[in-house]
Image 1 (cartoon, rainbow, N blue to C red):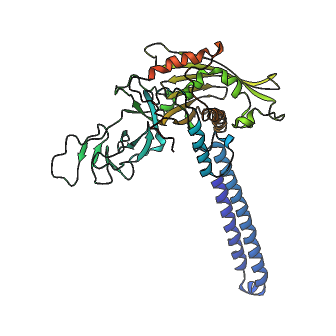
Image 2 (cartoon, helix red, strand yellow; image 1 turned 90 degrees about the vertical axis):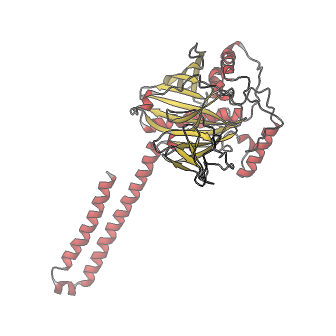
Image 3 (tube, rainbow, N blue to C red; image 1 turned 120 degrees about the vertical axis):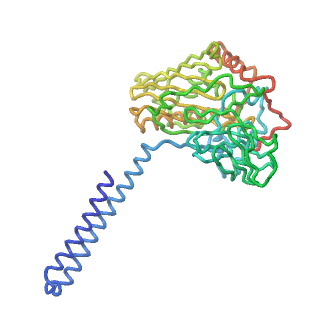
Length: 459
């Protein structure tokens, strides 16, 4: 439609120009006698057409920007210093980072569980890795190389070349299903890590010339790797969301945050149903700063969220999974006028993956949450939202941004809290006890623990 309007305007402009030329050409004598009149008429016609063209171009640009704002996928990526530190005040980013480090240094860590549980963890979003591309990622306190071969298959290996230690994800080249080191050209196969070529050597390739490969899966818009402290093979698979894999649900956007807390804090939030009925009652327009959301505000306190839920672990052979059912409603005037309510079905799948299924009058969708430990007390959490086509983009966008606001309230708590291995609980907190018992299965004898003397909080 915008293209047709633009073409019409240009056509009108040239029609004006041609008409002036035709009138001027009617009589050479007439043109000679009234040249000034024709010149002013020509300028006026040109000026009017140009102003009209400019007006419609500005209008088209504003329409395009409005369309992008309403219908383009959300891409909300927050830096570590941007969320959860309102209590430290504003100021330059560098000085804020220093204050955050000081808070972390002084914060009591508590009796922490192991820092890297066993399970599947997302290392990259599928759309971030094109065919023939390689990326360096930080997970589990290590540096990995994630690359996609010419056949479209993603591979994950240790990043450092065993030859002299170059990071192959920085300047390395993907050739076929191999990754070529940028330093000396050694080439390693993604499927098993074996070195298949040393370009300047005439000898046989040493048997030990290989790089560690990580078991990986690409499911539901993410590339996952299997981490196990005992070196065991995967004990379960990452389930796919059929509607996402087959394309019947559309990608609506993502949010990404980093959190300075133990990884168990994030999934434990699901079983902590009581916190929903307090921290997440104020509406999102009160923001995510804890000092604001509980402050009296006569304009915004007329509306509220109401939550209730049930958490339950599954039995074998799906003991790695748990289910949470959340009932959510939104009402005005102290709950007297309920605007809507919905049920959210949540699947916790191991220590680092959650599917939240929505089913509303607008349509259905799933919010995929991944939690990945970058280092002992630093987590990356990504949410991707997929929905049916009837769940139109502006509504989906509102859901993503609303969820982000609620999640950022939790971040402010996590960034500043102490982990308690023996919390003081009441009977209504029974799901937390069940959750911790369930989550403990993801730790094993050699799961690494946080060392107060060796680990650094630098980032």
